[in-house]
Amino acid sequence: MLVVGRKPGEYIVINGNIVVKVIKSDDGQLRLAIDAPKEISIIRGELLDRHRQEQAARSS
Image (cartoon, rainbow, N blue to C red; front, side, top):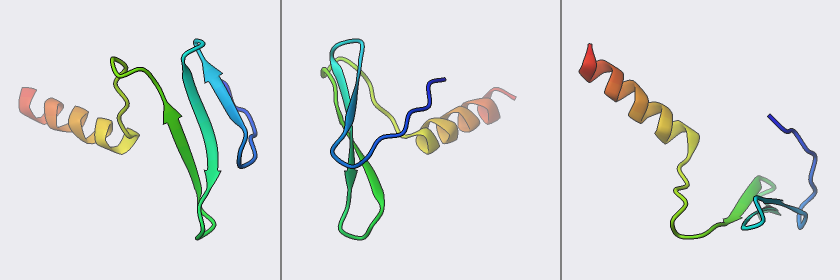
């Protein structure tokens, strides 16, 4: 895992075609803007975890 520090307005590029930009919202929270090709699936971690837990519960 790569851990980098970024300030609002700064970004990283993954594989030449995915841009993750740090944005600071008005309420002070940190937000990420992700620009990726349509064929790349992007899912929030908590949703992926929930989906995996539901699959595990169904299979047991």
